[in-house]
Image (tube, rainbow, N blue to C red; front, side, top):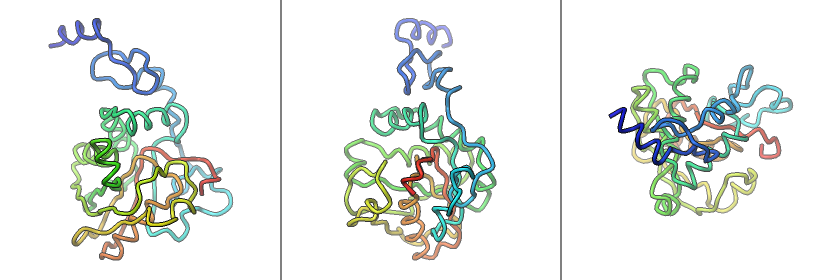
Length: 231
């Protein structure tokens, strides 16, 4: 099998999902250069909004949010932005497992026994257009790696306009953030999404779960925007 993989790699070498350069051996979705260039988020950071403290100088943008804490792996910039766009808009699905592995390797004690993973659901129209839900792929991979249960505890309605890069006010307009709980949600939930921007989507999901009886809600994403204008 290894010999066959080498032959395939010579004939049609795998390409990096972020930069399209040769990625290396079969199964690798990011080249070595892009892996090294990922903008990792380090400590100290605000546990409420997941921003590094220099970016949370004034007021935590998650103050008053319905989720209790948030955490992310990388900044939404450079290679991380390219990788996330490749997952969302170029169907680079293997990236979901890479992202889940990095979340599982670095997450604080949010992924503990007793919590249930809940993906932030994409709008049904967008899911049908793509053929998949990026957050659901990441959540499924994270469940496999962490051994934690996952549940589709949320459903989504409203509009399906693109929200990445939109301001908090724009996200709140109309019924774009119409989330409802499905049945009785778990008491302890970790919301999982691909990117944390204004926090409005995560907050709307947390509110829906709280209304249905969920007691503790945290949020984990692979990427976090650092653009303070989005807060």
